[in-house]
Length: 205
Image (cartoon, rainbow, N blue to C red; front, side):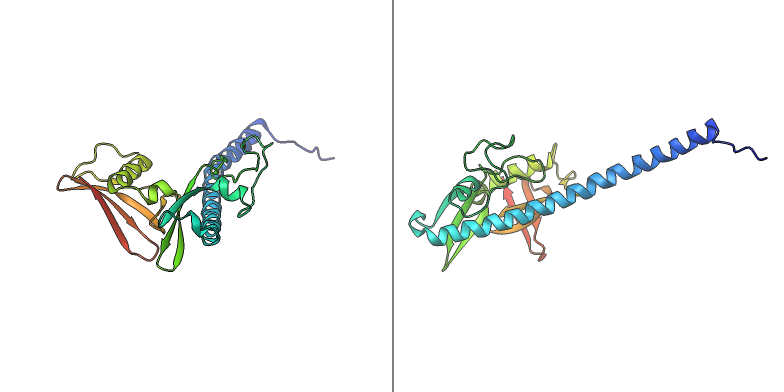
């Protein structure tokens, strides 16, 4: 009669090591995929909020002073132009009318400002009203802060090198991709590009 043999200790250790290696390889990929999905969810949510802000502007022409006004995401929720994601009982929300949640970091978007502008016969909403009306120097400073740039020189630009699509920025009603910050003739230059390949450069002395 044959005696059935179990796994030896060495075989068990080899299996555990192989499983550990697979986990180490898989986890970063899973995290990266989840981050990309959350970023796309955020961009989709931004689009929905901007459309709601434009509708709000069309319905409330008296708010333009004279050609623009700023409204928060929370005010759009309170006015029933967008639905909240969670109510005031949620740990990430303290507003009585509920909150719209950022899927990237699970924080409330309620205090985010939207700039609503009249352009010719249309109403345009721009993500982050303060940015939309900011000066060139403020925009450059924001990009430098976002990219965590240090010691930018003529020969050492600060370039976006991330693998996740988190280098998007709303500016003047257009979604731009931040490419980097350069120093040219002593002037800091931020380079951004749209999906339509229209390059935009903003500078500060």
